[in-house]
Each structure stands twice: as structure tokens, then as C-alpha cells.
Image (cartoon, rainbow, N blue to C red; front, side):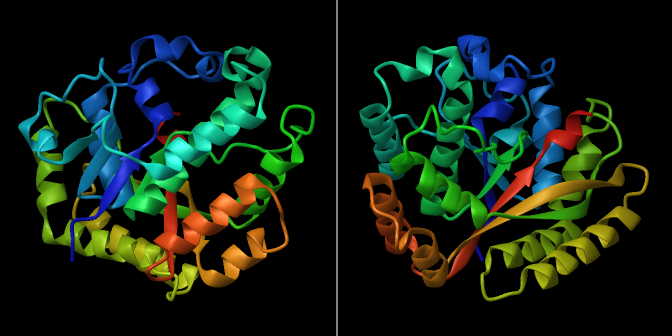
Length: 286
């Protein structure tokens, strides 16, 4: 089995203060004060049961100092093609007013486009998504988004099932004094077993609650072996099923360029029925 991988969302990178001027965009003005990059990555690896992270490319982005983390992080090169992301951005640009993303009133739409970008990128790459923010709200956008954009996005959003989950997280911010202990946790057999149960969340043939129970059970075992470092926290895990039935339900009776594209894309990447797992990391910053 390959090492379990998750994509860190752009919004989470902004929280880490690693993307310069992007923080000035109105869509991110409500984000809290920056958090230490390495601390967040250690915590997120544990929460997501991930052994590696992929990060979107930014020219200003600084690599972590830790050799342990460097070996577990891959930057997606800017030149590396993503058909889904390119097509989504082109469709938004074609359908919405010119330079719409510069207008503050489109802040919610901008966040939806970014989330859709990352969701489809994860579907393409068959990895999970780690995001500070919940799934963006698509309500009240009738005056900003025409039906050919809004309806297929709403249909896609209705298939996202949020589940509460109690997962192990560090009791406090990871510091230089205890980094090696967390590295030992991530390298342990207990963590490998915990990560394997997270894989079950991606398998559309395993019932969601059965998969979540397996994650909770293995997370509890890891917690009991590291009670001085870890604590259980209630977080949200959302699951997007990529199956023939769901694709037909979402887009079968909806016309329009985006609906047709999403149906074709998801069908093409569906070599097996699976789920995209979205981990909401916001509770880590409370």
C-alpha cells in the first residue's frame, strides 16, 4: 500500500503566513493570527492519519527546517498540469464578469472556486484534503453566480456528507522541546495502523460509519500509548463519494458547461468507486 497523502489547502497555508500578499485578499481577512508552519504540519499529519503532505506551489513559500518534515512534504510544481484546476478557472472566467475576483463582493465566490479547485485536484490525484475551513456555504449567491455555475456546484455540495469524529491531536503546540516525541509517534506501528484505517474512509465500498469507527478505534489506541502528548478533539470529516450513481444523480439532468465538465471529469478519474476525504482543521486553532 502506498503512503497515505493529503493536500494542504491554500487557506491553511495562508494561516501559516507562507504566501505573502495573498493574505491581503478580502476572502482571507477573517483569518486568525499566523501559526507556526512546522507545528501545524505535525498536528495535521496526526489528525489526517497521513504519512505525507502535498502543498500547492508558491514562489514565496519557505521549506520547513526539519529534515523529518522535508522528507514528508512534496510541493506540487507550478508547471505540473492539473486539467481540472485549469478548466474550472477558465469556466469561472468565461461565465463571470471580467476581473470578477478583484471585486470584494465576490469574496464568497472566490473561496468556492478555490475549494472546488482543490477538491477536484484531490480527486485527480487520489488523495485527501486538509483544510482549516469548513465546506464553503453556497447559499445566497443567486445574484452573483448564474444557474449554469451555481446549480451543479450546489448539486455537488449536497453529496458531501459531514461526520463528527473524535481524533487524536497534540495537547499543545508542537515545540522544539518535544518534536522528536511526535516524530516517534508518526514513525510508530500504531500510527501505521491508524493511517490504514483512514484509507478505509476513501473506499466507497466500506460503509462510512464502519470506516469512521475503525479510525476512532485505532486513534484511541494511539492516544492511550501517548497520553502525555495527545488528546481527543471533536472535528469534522466530510466525505465526497465518487461513484457512478452519485455522478448520475448530481449531473444527469443538469445542462450547462460546468455540469457536463464535472460529469465527464469525475467519470474519467473513477477507475474505482472511492471517496475524497476532507479534514476540517479549524478546531486546531481554537
